[in-house]
Image (cartoon, rainbow, N blue to C red):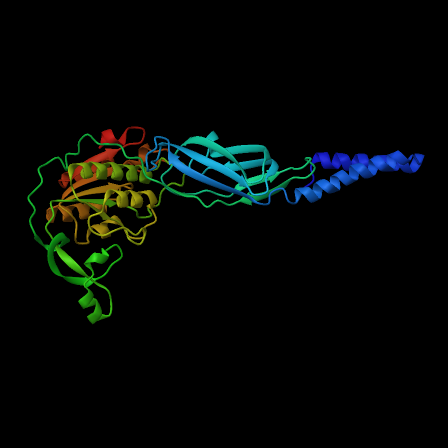
Length: 395
């Protein structure tokens, strides 16, 4: 694309040519041809200005930790390489990890001269805005080499995917789990013990080490061993991912997002106390491992999960396999959960219901206080989390 400078030189060449025709002065023809020739030469040279360029980036935690957490500090090491070199290079990097309205969202790098096989580097700091799997868009590269007469632009692709975990704040206490663990006792139900109860079809997330090859050969499909539950009491973390009708907002401060943070903090407390962690989610909304999950697998699920489920949490809670303790994370105060809590109590499960109060969030919504009172009458331990306060203290 021609720049203002190119148009100025072409206009000057045209004017000198007209004067030369009127005066028949030879040197005016020479100067006019020289100006036009410079512009033409710049056009040919500019066509190669962005060839051989490549970019690479590395995202790391500012404290050199191996994992990235929401609201944590991070740094991006950005590098530009040129096989053939380059000049007058302008690059615009859009960072999806920063807040949309933050000055850290857009980073610009200007390289006046890049030698062949050379490299230019930029390191910038940012605050990680949101959890989730983020993909960097192509870098917008632009060059006006060699004389600024033409501007050529092209996207430079450097596939970079970054997984940001939800913010985890350590809890000082959680009455649901602050009690002595029972001795390990086998139960006649599927679990994660050592006594084999039978076999069943293999499901995604099952350990390949537990495949029963003889039964697989006999039936023609993968079969896995099923063990009795002889573990110490565990915690089932049940997060409501049903697509409830909620106000549309671009803010990251929504009941669901805060519910994910609460789930991560509760799971962290259970892990530190030695309780096995289990998940109860809508598998159609997000795949997740069955049985006890380790800390890293749990964080990966919580980093990706979105409220897109088609099955209500009450349907998920009717399934067998819940542990002795259950923490229900309820971003939307739906009365249907009352029946599920009654059923859990009858099955001997100790329940903690964490209600996010939509009425206190920026987008607004119905109050969770009435449901909290009804849940307490059913013997459930209830925590109401309101926006604007530290959820770790409210839990």
